[in-house]
Structure formats: structure tokens, C-alpha cells
Image (cartoon, rainbow, N blue to C red):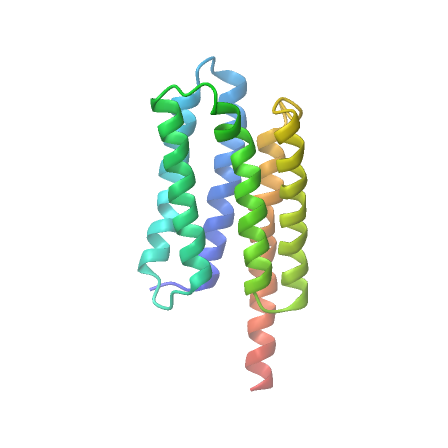
Length: 174
């Protein structure tokens, strides 16, 4: 049907575009939470459904799909319940924490030192964002979702050619 390479590309594209749209909606709409939530639900349906349909599933794909569904559901709940006390965490800090944990796990699961370094760096940058926003949720206001697009979406896009090179090297050796 399609490869893990294609799935990785779609994860990278949808995450990057969804964060950039989130930034845009946050700047142009007075009450854009609903538009942001629907953007993420629709955008994340693509790689989550692709994960379910993937011929050769692995734990890494399942972890990302499951965590994405849970984090998006938490955001939807916080918005629907109008839980203003946790909204700074839900709509800001959670996404850096999500990236820190997800990329740390990815760094431990992928093969190849360059790929491990890429995801380790992404995890570290997300952890820095988590800590910074824990102490001041307005610190990155105005740039937060651009930063998230760069430190979450771009690493997956950079990994597409790295993964292809690794696969070609393994095929050549065998």
C-alpha cells in the first residue's frame, strides 16, 4: 500500500503545516481555538489512519499515533470544558512536552547515529521549550507555533532522506 518512508513524510508535512496554520489562526482570528482544533483533527487523521493501514507496523508508529490522539483529545476536552486553568498547559506547554517525550523515544528506537542525533536534538529543544513554558507560558508568544513547526515537523522531513540513505546502504551491503 505505502511505505514507512511515505508515512514519515506525511507525519512531517501534516505536523509542519498544522503548526503553521495554528500560528496563522492565532494571529488572525480573535477566537481561533475551534479552527485550530479542527485543523489538528483533520491534519492528524492523515498520518494516524496511514499508521493503521501500514503493512509493517512498528511500536514507534503506534506510540506516535496513540500519543497524538490522546493529546488532541485532551486539547478538545480543555476547549469544550472551557477549563481556563489548564488551557496554558493544554495549548502551549503540552505540545513541547509531547515533542520532548516523543522524540526522546524516537531517538532511542531509530537506527543510525545521524538519525539518533537528529531526534535527540529535537527532544532536547522540545524539553527546553517545556521548561521555559512551565515557568512562563507567554514567553514564546507570537512565535511558539513557528518554533514547534521547526523543532517537530522539520526533523521528520529531514529524516526522510536520511532514512532512504540508510535503507540504500543496507541494501547495498546485503
